[in-house]
Each structure stands twice: as C-alpha cells, then as structure tokens.
Length: 249
Image (cartoon, rainbow, N blue to C red):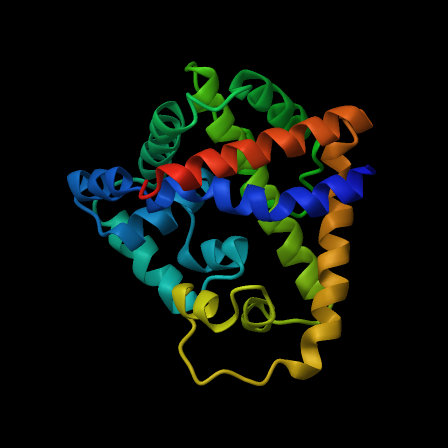
C-alpha cells in the first residue's frame, strides 16, 4: 500500500479511536471534579495546548466547531482553570483511558511505536493545534497510554489536514461538517444550529477535500515501509475491534 492509501484506510479508525477517551464516563467525571462542564472540558482540553489565547483564536484553530459553542466552553473553563491546566488534565485522561482500554490489545507496544513514528514525521505546517499537542511533554507511562496519546496526536493531525483541505476546496466549516459521513448530526454536535443549507452541490468539493486530506496526512506515513503501513492498519483494526467490544467506555 502507498502512504496515501494507508492514510485513507486508517482515517476512520484514527478518528474514532483518537476521540474514544472523550466519551468515557470517567473522563466526564474528571471534568466534574475540576468544576467545569463536560463541553468546557472538551473545548479547553483540546485547545488548552495553545496556551492562554482568546476564544477567537481557539475558534480558528478548532475550525469545525461553531464560534458561539467555542466561546461558551472556553470561557466557562477559563473562569475555573488556566487552559494549560485543563489540557494537562485532558492528556491525563487520555493516558488513563489508554492504560485501561488498550492494555489488552495484542501488539499495543508496536502500535504505540508505529503511531509515534508517523506523528513525529508528520508536517505540522498550518496546523497549530497539532503542533501544540505534539510539543506537549510525552507521558512517561505504559505502552497502552503511549498508544492512546499517539492516537490523539494523529487524530489532531487528520482533523487539521481536513480543515485545511476543506477551506481550500471552498467549503465553510459548516459545509464541511454537513458533507461529512455524519452529516447534520455532526454539525449539531459541534454547535451549528439548523436549518442547514442543501449539500448536494457540495459533494464534489468534499470528495476533492478528502483526497487532499489523505495527501497531506500521507507525509507522516512515509516514515513507514509498505509492510509497516499494512501492519499499522492491522493493529488499528484490532484496537478498534477490542474497544468496540468493551463499550460503553
């Protein structure tokens, strides 16, 4: 398989696994112990790696989340904790989830190694959120925790690439959400209220954006041999099957 083929095939697995810890009840309980709502923990946890910036900057970095929803979450968290503190708690929950849910995945040590090779080789140009997360101190923890962090980082890279490609295709963030695989449900979850515009005329732009996304993400996968790319896909598939079998998280 070529790097672009591996990037395309791994994308849904990375997007699902990289966000699984955010849906874990224990993660939501951590938000409660910090004294902030779950949505605020999600927004400030992801964007807190950027540091103490304004909500407008966070909106630009997150891209796909509606501005009002960003401001609500960012400001609610900022009244309680500094963004870097929320990001640290977010990372800790990612590690905790990995240690609990990926520990039994066959080959998890190898999965962590391959993921971090891809992440280290990825191009962070015009992806400030991915760059900020990659610069966060790595966890001195188990291979399962390292794998979870690798999934988080690679997911941020994929999302950043998708944002770049969508804007280059002439899609607004809302249009990109509506033409994605989850459509209106994803748009609503990211704070975009209905009514929504028709998406039929935008499908070709979305297909082009998807191809460009895979091209951008493939840079990191070039650090792997073709055999290692297939191996990583197999390991991601095994991890996904294992995590789905353990749901709820």
